[in-house]
Length: 316
Image (tube, rainbow, N blue to C red; front, side, top):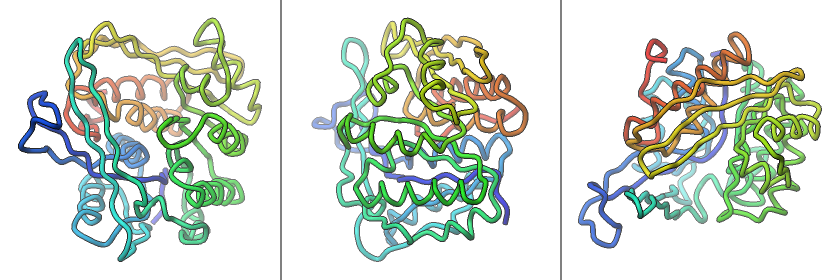
């Protein structure tokens, strides 16, 4: 099978107390599947791209639940690396309301994906039939071996002439800014598209400018290989009322997306939905189309619970 987009990273089980309860008070947990790169594949697949998801999963009911949920969305899982050992990562989301912010607690140490090794994935086979590849800064942050496996994937993608997209997605709980800068500089130097926030650009690359436009332009100056830099922009007057938009810098021009006023149900996975929408529009048409789909589908994502977006192309 040929793919328009292949994504690579860790998916986990998400456990959330219902009805705005705190973790220490709840007697039940809602279960969802999510992970940055899988969320991207789901969004792009729902818009019309043929997507495959590559990860390493434990061959038990929890790992199979993740693969099943990906397949339910039409995402190809035939290249998943299965292991009888290790574990599936978990994370807990506690939803807040002003003045209490929502919070996330991770339990992903020594997960199956964190133990992935270079050579476990047959990238030559996958990339012989692929148009684009996407990963995030979360994947190499999982462990030294995951970092090497991510470097291998990007290197193989470039050898095959594959379009490469990277979302910085900096996670301070996984690695330091210095570690992130070292690894992500190597990866972004080979990318065609960079997706980020203003905050992550400063944390990882030390880029601090007077405007979002200047941040995007500066990143493109640092990495001249980039065909486009996209930045998502969120303003948060309250936990559940936000504004949401994005801009991109490409070929010396600034492109802007519409601004959405959001009444949020669940914002987890919004940036991933943006990446999936942006890649759909960019790969099928141009930067402006990418921005329009990216912001629209990610705005809609924040109106449904769970990590996955459930919007259709027609709704965007």
